[in-house]
Image (tube, rainbow, N blue to C red; front, side, top):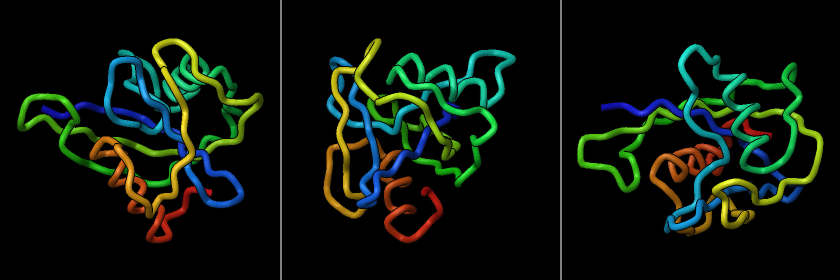
Amino acid sequence: MVIEKVAWIHREDGGRVLVARSRGKDAYYLPGGKPEPGESDREALVREVREELGVDLVPDTVTPAFTVRAAAHGKPGGTEVRMACYTADHRGTPEPRSEIAELAWLDPAGPAPVSRATRAALDRLAGGADGT
C-alpha cells in the first residue's frame, strides 16, 4: 500500500527546515498531508498548511522540489509513503493549529526524531536538493 502525501519545505535563512509534530505522535513531519479525492497537490498543500500552521501559501508560488518514498511511520510493514515536496511563499507566521502539538526548526543534516519520509526529504536537502 502507498500513502500519497504532499509536504511544504520551508527553510529559514540559516537553512533549518520547519517541521511539525502532531499530538500523540513521537516523530516530526514536514507540514502537509493527504490530498482529498479530486483535490490537486497544490490545493491539498494550501489547505493542509492553513489548517496545521495558520499560514496562507501563495498558490502561484507553489513549486515542485522533489518526491521521496519511504516506509510509513507507525503503519503496518509494507506500507509506504510517497511524499511530493513543494516550496512556496507564504503569508503569516507558522504556529501550531489543529492536531499540531509543536513546531521545530531542524538542521537537515542533524539527528532528529522524524518520520522516514521526512528523513529522506531532509537528506535530499542536506545534499543540496532545491528547497529554498
